[in-house]
Image 1 (cartoon, one colour):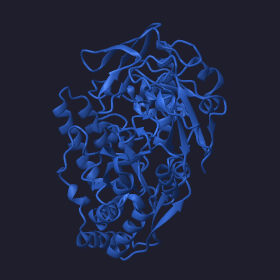
Image 2: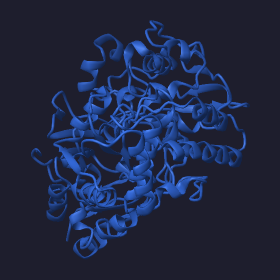
Image 3: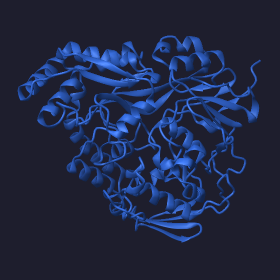
Image 4: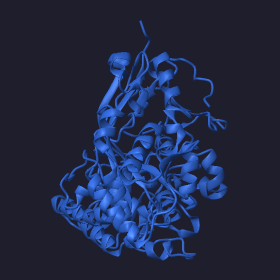
Length: 520
């Protein structure tokens, strides 16, 4: 369902109608782990850094972030920075926010991102009532220090990411639930008013006139229109009712260049599509599960799906990250498990049946509002034809409903998933999805060996050594297949008449730089 479009303005005060879907949760930085809510939170909140369109970090609220060892950091804040309720952004707003996000008692989805900080283990332990990490210290109003348990080459790069953003004092006085409906941030945009979020319809943001960051908006605001169908969104893009759409429906991939012409956007994209099979599902744990996961992976003809359904806008995956990231390696030992090999798939499935005979059907849950039916049906047919089992899609109306089931661990089937880079590093794809107990570890994968190897990679001081260690850790993932990589994205989108926009490194529009001019 979509609401009334924003007033059709042009020039520096133009309100840009942008595609989105209903966020899973309230708009709280430490509890937003999906990109429909994430794009709104990132527009409302700015942290120590912002990221340029190419992914390069740029100082924002931080005056400086100093370290000599990648373990001890001193952070100085700019003193003229305010939240949109007029209160200053101080060191305490960061320290309290990060402690809140890390403490198990608060059950935040982005909790694991604070795991490098000293004292995290104590506040994150099951049943812990502790709420303050020993590694965070407020020095004065505009200075705080961070101590990690060990050197971490990736920590500084990630400090512009969503969970590391500050929250104002009002967050703690009125509570996360109320705040999440009416968030007060310090970002380039602010909520238009008390009724700015009309659930399942629209979220209206306007330019923050007091914003001091480097990414100054070139428009008057963003209205995120909450679609339940990509086809509907594309129709609105064609007619000029939608100004920017970063993902085109599969139905448009053959003709979009002809239809949109110069209004089409194409760019590399640090995003991937995956198939998640939780370990708690029957037949998918232990030795039997390892065989079946590999068999299903080899039963999917990725290249055929990329060619016939996505028309070259996807590339078969070779690992668990994205090929646009520094250090990516398409030839990690064991990556042949991602090749289409029906003969080997049948052999592995037979070996699994010797352990325990297969029963039931293999279902792939997907959100109907995300244009996934075509590829899910194709992958299911490939699995069914290769392995001789019943395999089919299991549609769920909305992305939020799928994510709610996954978060609560009540989903009873395999399901489609994916990852969109939060900052340009392979660690961002691996830590939240595969580290034991991480907030986006949807498969419930747990491997002390993988944890140790990934932690060791983060302790490297040289980027090349870190990349090599990361890819060594991925060898374990290729053996276990907690999720099955399918394909990497090439960003394909479009803009409305008179609109100028481009896709950033992560495949999302660079919202602050979107402009809209009159059409002659």
